[in-house]
Length: 416
Image (cartoon, rainbow, N blue to C red; front, side, top):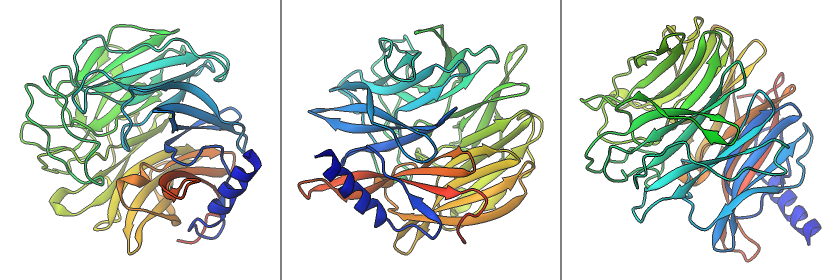
């Protein structure tokens, strides 16, 4: 049966609408799988995904060695998880080689009442510690959109959006196709918090910003000067631009804008920023609809995020966003979605260390709706591993999401 399933998946992958010099890759995720994430590892990369499991879901993973995926294995399973297209589980590989995985678990009856739980593995996913939560407020409100960073000594930290002051779970990620959604009435604001994970337990959490957008992804990285976190802020006047906080020797800085887009929106766009860093070089990418024009923007810092060069704008008028960044030896890669006649296309661009554009390519076609999720990439040697969610059918012929994975050569990417 397994060989038949692999043949079916291989045939489906071969039919994917990708461009020349993009190689589809067979993976072990079953029909119905969604929410792919990629983590770069010392052996290549690790793909994680959510998969239906009886009347619940399982968080599964498979290692990619540069040529093929290994067997799929399970991190955790549950019947009370918050499963959606935008706030997805993720795997972080700490500097000491340990793996940390998190996933969202419902905490109450309200739609967006859920907690973050995380577990640690010291043996590349063979066994996992009991799940624990980094927040201890006990409120049945939204906690999610996690990102990670690590200290030089290897200590891992989680960053998340924390709704403990909202009084009720605010509306967001289950709605729409990635466009704006109105926040529900709230007693207080969504906050941004972080906590360290030592072994299989968390230290006290720290508030980094007391008013942020309710449902945009956070992104974190380590620089020469210390860790940095980027996220979508929310001013009293509903300006929702991308901000950064940095941890220096004397503590965390006050929030500062990466760029002043001036996007005023009375709701969450469910379209957060991403970051990549190496030494004192930092790149931040994000989606905006300032002045009613959708666009993707990229800004580069050469001083560990203390200041940024003027932002560059891409795909003005057609951008769908859902950006991701990756670091390569002499610069950065940016992945994002663009609106197209038949749905959407996946764009890939390469930049130098100071943000100088080298090329932009179209690497795949996919749906424009939320079913496509957030496409992901990982640099594996001289190639780029891509993953996204596509529409498909299960063995019974019923509609079901499917995960697509493909390889792109870094030096000879397909024509745009």
